Image (tube, rainbow, N blue to C red; front, side, top):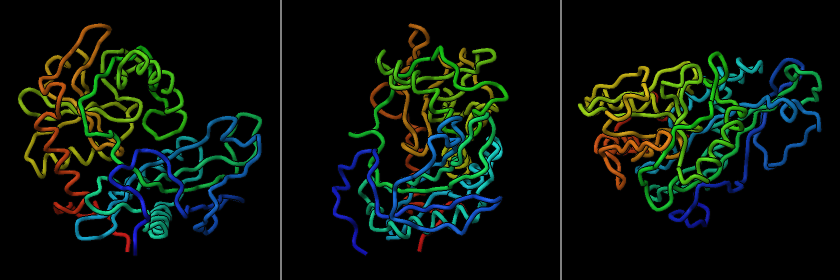
Length: 341
């Protein structure tokens, strides 16, 4: 199958309408069979629950072309289970995990011409999401829902190569204890918009959010988890019940232990420790790992020894190994790669 006539090497990270998307509706207490459609428009009441009370959740993953020409998706089973967790927290009917995987298979298969070729640096970003669609005026969950998934080809998250970021410790809180920080709800990202716009206006690339209870511990950014490397070469990621359980972060920890023989642990990370870290990265689906060169704590600069010009050596090894697994250059652990025939 021929690929679309796109300048893949110069593709940005943005939305491009593709040919097909997947849709399934929940009414009368059950999900319908679902189907692939060409219609990218959503019609709903002006009083739809998602518009009034933000009852919406989503996921994000990528499809790749491996070096042997296969089309694959990276660990979609974890996205399926995380969407179930998110649905339960927002009182939504979970979309069955096997149905989720089948929907992704159908979506990628239908849009195979849009999966970028191997070596282009691009990928097919997949966005599954669901929301309350029936009218709701009193504060309560919807009764009817829609699950959808679309795909769009994207280039590297950072155009022109990955350069270490400068981030600030934010005065805003991202999530409250016993709140929704551990699920992928749209409302979490809405509340981070003012904070990121403010950070950008002040010349920073991102925010570092602290725990809202004590403001002494590192949590995450608005859309990525933190990963640190200590000066003795150990990998540390923050532990908190208000942090989103990143699939990329979990994968990097396993890569560190099983492929690179590096000690890695998940634990509480205190702000006071930052000055003693050798490397720092933001990990997530979009960029895999984005290195951090400088953290600014209310005017006090904390410069990571890895510098401001390139990834640190251990962060680079993690990045190269995980992307090698995703692209088929390195053998993957069992169950990590789903091949779309």
